Structures are given as structure tokens and as C-alpha cells.
Length: 122
Image (cartoon, rainbow, N blue to C red; front, top):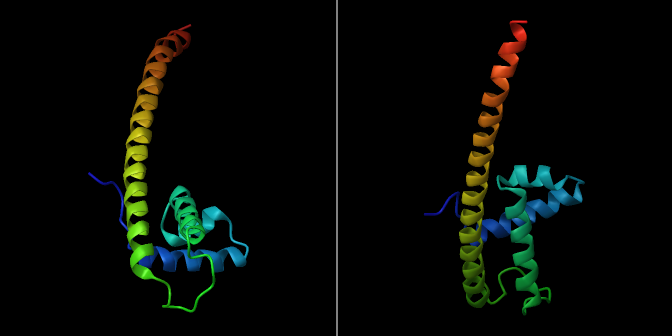
């Protein structure tokens, strides 16, 4: 089961263009990711994915609409699916860790409460 929202490759391209504009205005990565509606990690993965696709054959500047969409989009789709799967796995890990942390905090509070109550009666 996927967690989160899937983004089409066109939407990712548009959001990365928006991110570049915000970065040029001096916005922080946190502000940029918040404006895009994604996590900072997702923003970084998208940037890295864009860099890797540019390095694998689309490094020259071309006019809009003239890039070979089929080959790049297929590899981008695969990369996006891998990243979404990894993101879902990481979200589950973080959730498990947070639940474990809450359990430990509750145990710690339960251990401290008898001492605090005992000190009030003195």
C-alpha cells in the first residue's frame, strides 16, 4: 500500500521549475518544499532524479517540447515508482520508531510518577 500522494512526471517538472524560481529568490529548502507541498526529502530526490536523467543523455539544452519524452518518461516513471516505494518504506519505519519512542516515554513517565507523588506527601 502506498503512503502519500503520487505526482505525475509533468507535475514534478513543473514543481521543480517553481522550486528553481523560489531558490533564485533566496528561499530556503524548507520554504521551497513547503510551497511545493512535498517533504524536503522528496524535493531532494526529485532534484537528484532530474540530475541523473540529465546526465544519462539529456544534458544538452533543447527547446521546449523537443526532448525525447518516451525514453526519459519511462525511466523517470520507473525512478519515481522506486522512490515512492522507498518513501513508503521509510514512512513506515519512521512511524514504527515514533510509536516505540512514545511507548518508552510513557514507561518513563509511569516510573517517575510514583516518585513525584511520594515527594508531594512529604
